[in-house]
Length: 240
Image 1 (cartoon, rainbow, N blue to C red):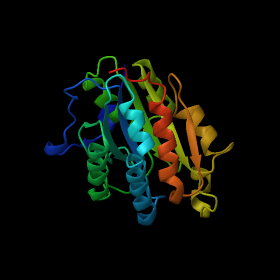
Image 2: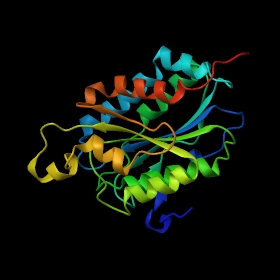
Image 3: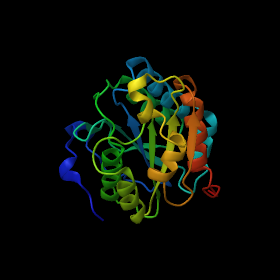
Image 4: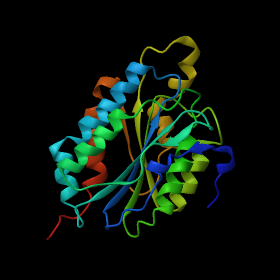
């Protein structure tokens, strides 16, 4: 597998360095979130609130507990330009409402890491390395990319996608559609054929991959809940 990690300079605080889960998990999931300059601070807060809403959803908790191991591992990455990709949490095991609430609280407390261009490829590369280094065994490995625009920095996102898929990683997408973009961002947020189709062609891939589309940040949480359920629901029911 190849990476252009030399072009991806990211910082991991010692307290949040990625660590493998000590107990078996059903899914290892990296939330890869766009914080580029096309997303203002109020929209960023709605993204964070959306994650909190999703991890507070009792249906999501039930889906997690319904897996063979009843646990998933989650980490959170923010990206903008190639030199602005940060893993802001280590691996957190979620197995019940309390651990899900604690993870959501951690996300809500994190300050925004950067503003810049949009290097989806760099976000994917960092997330893929975390999943590979985590040594999660037979757990399904998933990267969850949420953003409002195309890749405009770093290597092509399709190359990063192909490398991740070659390592048995599935990449899903959540596209946030800007229906009233300013003129200088139009091509970035509304590419020919639409952003969701662009994600299908350039970002998502792997077994069962999909894209969820929303048209405003206020519905991000409901969409993320549906997305998590889709990612977890294919697991066989717990028989313990």
